Image (cartoon, rainbow, N blue to C red; front, side, top):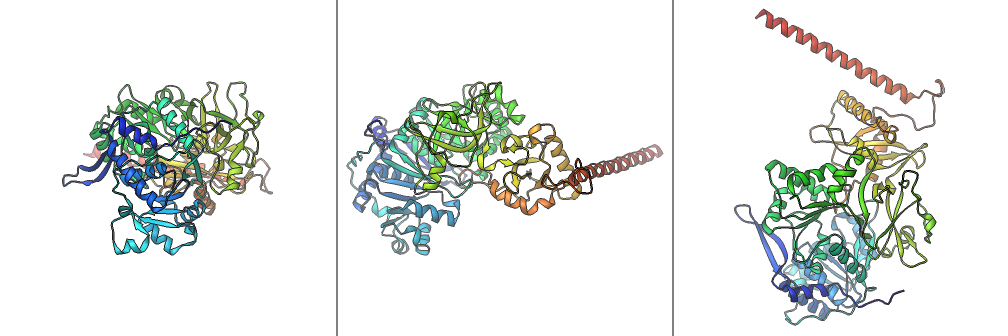
Length: 625
């Protein structure tokens, strides 16, 4: 095992302040003027580094030291960036949790983090008073806000008071590449969020990949549509522009505010979920807006529709710019990347046919394999676990596992989940089981087919969400779909849950019948979707994760579908259970489908007859005139 080298990611901010003191470090929204134009607060790298030192001195005097975990629940902005880097400079460990995950999940995550110090908005401190047990390890507390009687009753001090006036630099702690740097909790898209432990060396490797493989260079301007990635920018020498948006409601983002920020500051790089760009791209097209300053747009956290990429490349970005779709997770990122131009030219048509979403080739130093799908733990890695390419050069669909310097090694205080997700390699290092399924094509590109937990296993086959849902998403009245399974694993009935476009929800039985038959007609065209015969129309927007507003919470939809599956116009008994009064080749569901088709045809004939009669009467009246 290599000897750990001295490294502290916070040192990069001091280096930037020395080399480019007047370059803007962070630009943050501060409301709007009477004409609706954005107001901002701006700090140079020199000023941001000085703020970091002020907070580091104050935190150190307050008793925060090397290795202390500090729960940080501060709204995105200058204070958040400065305090995070101050903690890293001290050698303390910031703990970052999404507050919108729900009370019970939030309290469980806090208890598991075992923070020694709490820095947060007043609401978090009030929560601590109501539910003290999860906060039992907290020995010091800091409330964010101005001095007031209320704030003084909630915490030991305020962040304003804690900030030291000392002008001298705070010495960076002598941490190593093996020192704990931060804890970031997952989005919880498939369960209670888990605390992912980052080491300083992992941050070092991530920064190197973003610089050398993705191509982000010093002097660029980044629009931080995913706030957590803004923490890398000072180490990359990149200006951070915080957008005017609610980070917990990215699906409701105002596209005009995004465009305004890009055009005002000459943004060169933007990293956000597809949900955001699905709002920005149509706005730009409608208003004839192009964004020539953008060199690259990074989209991640969910499958990116090729049509969205094509719109960006054709109508919005300059010919030299590109869209990249990096693959990764909180536990390991970035892992792969792919040019949007390659997607449009080579893989988009295959994705539209339900072959999954291509996410590209592994980045340098990242090892990616596909193994057999299993829910059991795998303690030790063996190369024989990796699936081999078949006759066509592609591997079968399996579970994606990864290894490399950006791969985290454990979940905080979750030994069972760690054992389930990590595979120890005898040659050194850890393989992380992504919880995603996919395959490699003959060109060595990785294709994503969905989450392992979301697969649907029937008596006859295994269905994967992304290849199936893509087919049904072609319907013009569909906003998105979700494949879920009703019943126990191994004999599930696949159910397609549909979120229609606004104004397209089928209200009458006839409309539901028409919509259902049109969807089934799409599914019958492909072998992997023919078994899907049950369709339900969801009466609201799909539930999604808080962080990205894009990861569909299929577990919730599966529960809903189990309660409402009788409403499906094509519900059939779970196989194999043939009717005793009919031959085994006939099922009640088959008869119901046949009757449904006959009913639709009959209704269509009646409408056609009425139409022809009315047309004939109209002609008669015209002739009388």
